[in-house]
Image (cartoon, rainbow, N blue to C red; front, side, top):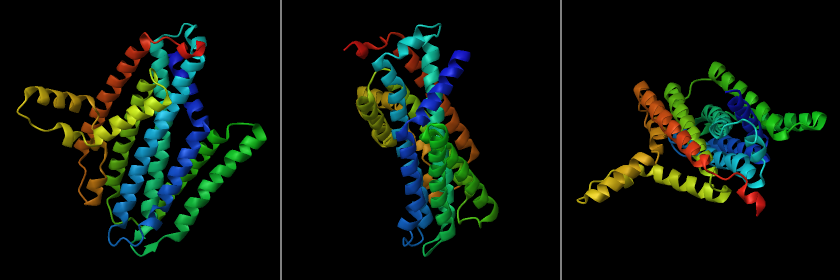
Length: 319
């Protein structure tokens, strides 16, 4: 277990040290922070659009970050041969794969949690269709700049990774502003408890995306991994419409039911529509979603271990 923990910790640090990680986080936060401006004159639909847009941004950027981190820390190590140094020691292959999955899912989860906290702040900024909390908006943009400044300062003084410490600083500042909004700002005209449930389910979906990305990265490079994950993502969004259809052919029904079982149904984790119509999200749904996500996570981990067992390490290093 010590090997697994060390691999997971190193993979987590490697992931957030990649410049593209913080660039994606910065882009996502700026988009989420500006959604109240974009939707300000949408009559009686501002909060709905802010929630929808923020959750969509978190999910799409979370998919991209998961694929890029998996490709950088798994595919690249296998391509340049650095994985051989680790596997030459008494480290089982399953421990290497599970450590990579744990580290990348934690990095993707950190990304998703920061974006979800920013989404709640954006909801507090969007007061109604004609007005915004401009001081909250200005403070949110300011803390993003302060996070970048802290990362640059630590990089200049200690030579540490800018991306890593800018991510930590921005996450802490966003968390502080989130706590301030919950404590001192008026409650928006929607159920914050249900919004919290929806964002929690969204984080589970991002974790599953990261696991699938690592599984694909054990065999594929960055572009094929991105293509495969994108296909699974869009098929999963339409899973109920594509595969839950009855047909006269038993073969077609069998194929559809198999695809429905294999491809993750992302609609289970997308609860923005329930927030938009003010529908209560029962706790039983969240529990069932957690069970579904846990089962898929375990199956993806098992499949990743199976794919990596007979994978020739550093096959591309000799080309």
